[in-house]
Amino acid sequence: MKSNGKIAIVTGAFGFAGANLTEHLLDYGYKVYAVGRKGSSHNDRFSESGSLKKVLVEMDDYDKICDHIEDEDIEKAEAFALFHLSWGGARDDFDAQSQNIDGSLRFLDSAKVIKEKCLKSGNSDVLVKVVGIGSQAEYGVKDGLITEDLSLEPFSAYGSCKAAAYYLMSSKARILGIDFVWGRIFSLIGKYEPSGRMLPDVVRKLSAGEAVSLSSCEQFWDYLDAGDAADAIIALFEKGKNGEAYNIANGNYERLKSFVERAAEYVGADKGLIGYGNKAVPYVSLAVTGNKLKNDTGWEPKVSFEESVAFYNS
Image 1 (cartoon, rainbow, N blue to C red):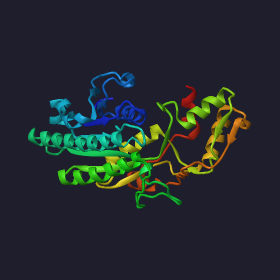
Image 2 (spheres, one colour):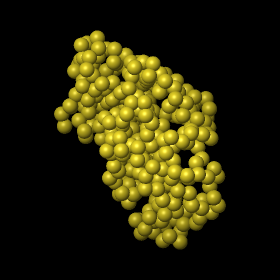
Image 3 (cartoon, helix red, strand yellow):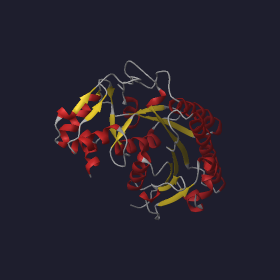
Image 4 (cartoon, one colour):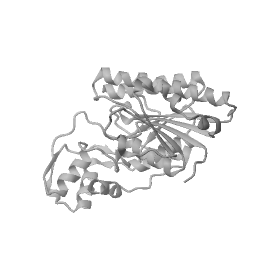
């Protein structure tokens, strides 16, 4: 598909959510600058082409991503979509988590330079917009329906630093005059999902006839296909309102036990192999609405839970 003048810069482009986003951007005719870490085993997920350029840099150099953008794109682009998905470190590694905040702010510096270069080249009508990606972990433990107007009360270093990045990026974008939107991802499943996560491991074991031991699984959960999430993130660039935060979620939440048993049914496993234990600690229940995203952008999820589970056996 030929470029329509839209340029995307994606940090974390070779990870789980980022790879899905990169694929969808290419399908929709964007030229993509795929930003990844040097030496990552996932960097071979995409090959360079006229529509995709790899930029392998560490977060310390995110303020220099602008140096990798081709002059022709600066001069002729209709829009620059800067998607920030990159994030590293264990959930309670305070030093590693805090470093992510600095990299996030550096990414905005590149957005500013790109905008300035476009203006200097005479491309004054170009839209430069940053979409930052956060997490449900920013909310912490909530009893009722999770909406975007709730207070952020994270209990992990990961959630705390995601929330800090949201506030700081919002402020800096406003000061720099850069359009900015924030999306909070809940639970993604599907293509490129890494092993070691609960659902793919449960599916793998049940498919092999192995028993699984879980918590009580009585909490609410919301699963969204990673491809649907990619479309949601693109919708935030194209139609999300400047300065707003959005939940990126299916909105059709169920008890986690229901999802586990639907997965067992899909692979034809004996549900007697599933052992349920005590209530999870901390008890995080994700009863969430994605109505704000749907109302503002028109986005709707399309992929069923079973279609997402199918990727685990492909």
